[in-house]
Image (cartoon, rainbow, N blue to C red; front, side, top):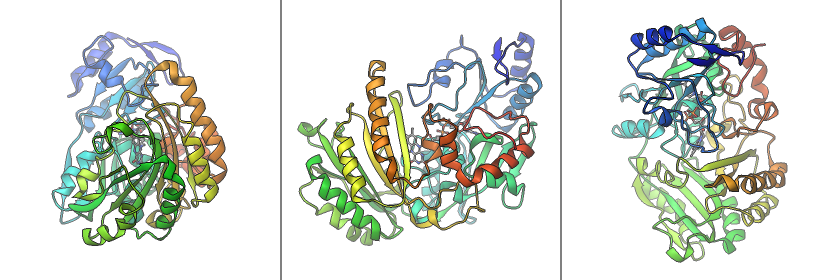
Length: 471
Ligand SMILES: Cc1cc2nc3c(=O)[nH]c(=O)nc-3n(C[C@H](O)[C@H](O)[C@H](O)COP(=O)(O)OP(=O)(O)OC[C@H]3O[C@@H](n4cnc5c(N)ncnc54)[C@H](O)[C@@H]3O)c2cc1C
């Protein structure tokens, strides 16, 4: 079996070694000739087309330990796939031994302790589904099919961020297989340096096999959804967004976006493909208060569609699932913003008008609130000054359209970058974002992260990520 080493060289792994590994695992091992290999190597962004030499679909922590030990012994390049949603495709590497964690999707909820223990292959919806049975929730992201582990290791933002911070602020502990093949616990009481680094510093320090999430009482009913207007209304709608967001309580999260209207059933057919401006609102406190909070949005101008209603929280969490489906080509640029300025909203309108595909969007996520409260000592995630996140999200279908769409996203980014805090979101970085963008994302945490790396992974075994080299 031809494999790649950590040094980028070719190595012929003898068949008896592969057979030996198979015999020690519970989960299946796939080579390029096996059914299921193509599915396992495929990630959300169709721009990524890489071929690991061997895929192990882990069925438990012991499978992970076996693979890490073999990779260390043979100097093999290792990569780890969770939900496969990383836009840069960090989960897959050519010639590597790939751990596919997606069969490990158990979630156990302890309602008394308010903790959910989730296996590392879960997607966000797995956790929401089980925790909502108890009227509880943790901070997950906006699209329920995203993997929990990649999201949490890079921070994680969603509708609950303003109330309870980053997803990674809501982690009580993690189980981790380290570079020397040991299973360790990371929490404030156990290996606190590792725990600090894992919350924002990415998959640089080990293979996470389980995450404990702190839960909060929430729902199941809340008020949320989206309202859309023609793009001609954007000056007034974005101004409304700016004003409402400034005074919104932590229970209310608002997202503004401009894009061609998707073919959604709640939008009139004749509007599909025409430019729109939309506001997403999610109020997770008392539904009666929520209805009052969203009235200024629902009663504003003449919307072409309005689906802000009382609905179950778990439904709100999957409301956006259909708009960015797996298998499209994607290229993003993102910046954290300290505020929404008139100059920025003008640029959003100008750049949205130049969108080259029916699927692309310019999005403003509201953050702020609890995200801004903790200090840098809490965890590596940083960017506690972020109040909004700008995402220039290029999305299209045909490889022939790559150049035009990438050019659009880059130009739009150049125009809007000046409004940034200087920080960017590590989980939204693309394949061509280099070390300086990792630096912008991790800023003040980099030095300390390098020290933790020296302690836990001095040979830089975990390197197919936003890599931090040992100090
Ligand atoms: C449609 C879409 C919606 C999104 N929405 C949000 C959102 O609302 N909020 C938000 O914060 N982010 C969001 N993201 C970004 C998302 O957080 C990142 O893409 C994240 O990396 C996805 O994690 P994953 O497990 O799905 O990815 P993968 O591609 O599987 O992995 C990403 C990285 O994490 C590492 N990793 C995965 N599992 C493990 C493990 N068990 N142990 C160690 N390392 C591991 C991988 O090696 C890789 O480096 C979204 C992305 C997409 C494409």
